[in-house]
Length: 126
Image 1 (tube, one colour):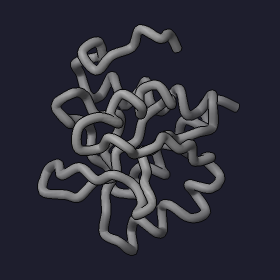
Image 2: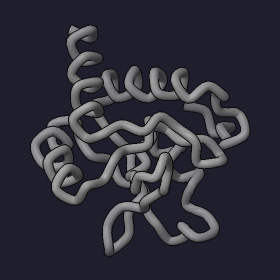
Image 3: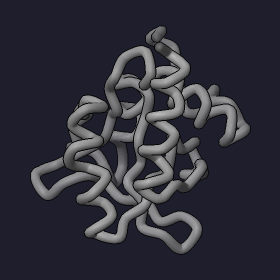
Image 4: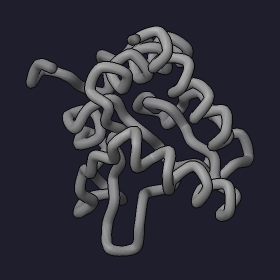
């Protein structure tokens, strides 16, 4: 990634951003979050409480401003995500918003749909 990324230069199409996200995760095997001592940040989208996820530390860090200033980027391995996060998000009735843009818009997936997409992309990588 270059140091010149900004929220304003992201792909406008949420499906394109979702594809960029899953391609990056299939390569790096990491999912990036913003967290503090209480857990991950949450966005509201499509009447769902969502955990936003990003394809890189740089993209996640762009969101660590204003109300989320003080949150830290954290990488979650795909293996850890599958073993703990999918079930935990389902139990907490949270969804995932994939690679949101500056307005907080992105594709919202239920945890099982997100894991299905991860598995599908991993299968293509092999």
